[in-house]
Image (tube, rainbow, N blue to C red; front, side, top):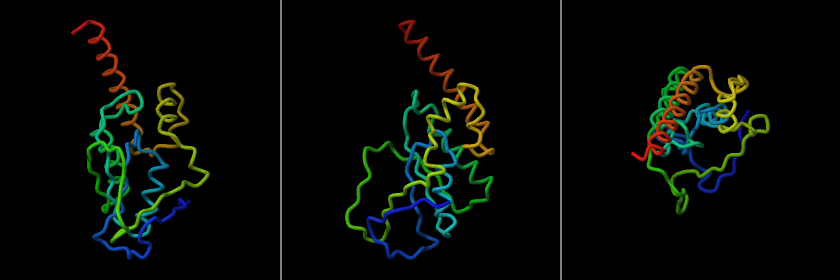
Length: 167
């Protein structure tokens, strides 16, 4: 189940153990759509660097950056993916590059059978108590998704109470 891709840069790159395929995202939560894309590179024998944008939690991004990193690391550790690194980067407004010197620049399009997966839909399903989301999030991190969403909801309520009290 490979994602189709279009290369905008150097398509003559030879995979090397020392060169990483980079992925940037919010991963709110890390789901099977993300996983299939990243595992596509892992299955090609390429190490992967997952860069998690450092964003403030809000309604659309309920997980802290640290919680997101923990979920991603836990999943890849459980799968024995030793060639995956996860790092936090500052929030970004764009991804830019000059000439494709020394690396590929690929735009991936998901296969139809997973292209519909939505992190927003997963979060809403968890909040509604509907267990259908569990098919979309690996078992190794499902409990973290539930726990972190509960923590996020409690934090949001606490912030609203403080705001309402005028403190």
